[in-house]
Image (spheres, rainbow, N blue to C red):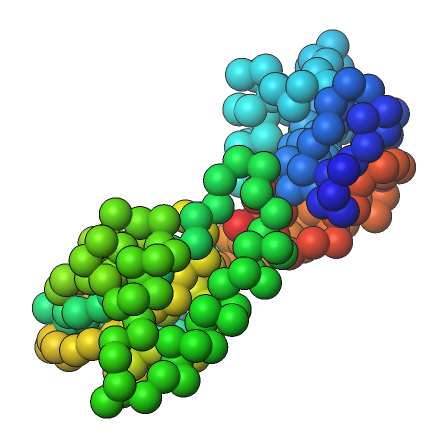
Length: 262
């Protein structure tokens, strides 16, 4: 058992409603998600939006009626102001580099893949010395990055020295794109990049900056982003209020990465 799972025999609950069975071993994130859903289901019942006969299931599945009632509950209780033009403009100025069209990056990487059951801490300890070696190598010497990619990378690109070619933002997983785009550095990035696929050592070989989109052309997209941010903030605050009034056992709810509120 690792620190982010509950033990086989631990049963968590919200006001006595079980969130799991004694036989399950759940990740902390899944358990928090079930807890937040149950808080909302019970709040919908208390508000008269859901029949008292609706019951919670320990496998985390809720009824269609409960799902609809939760939607109605959130519609009634979350105050979501419409983003102003000024707020959209401030966001645009602060994130101008994210609104470039045609931006391309030529890059290569070394992937240390995360597979089921892998110890991520051990994987990082394995990757870090290789990262330091390729980041500190003499550019005039033999290509240490290419050699390391051929030796260590779990990506098929390793056979080509880790070459990924020219990439645009939409070609990449979002967490990979955040590290590659909107920056000016060229060379090996100063940190391991963690994505859903694993840990990456990334080298940017060339950049084409593209053209910054006008505020008018992206204002609608920015407003949508700000609405989503406001929704997440309001939902977190509402869940804290519900949790504060509930009997919560066997689950930690003070985590910002609860899937339900991302």
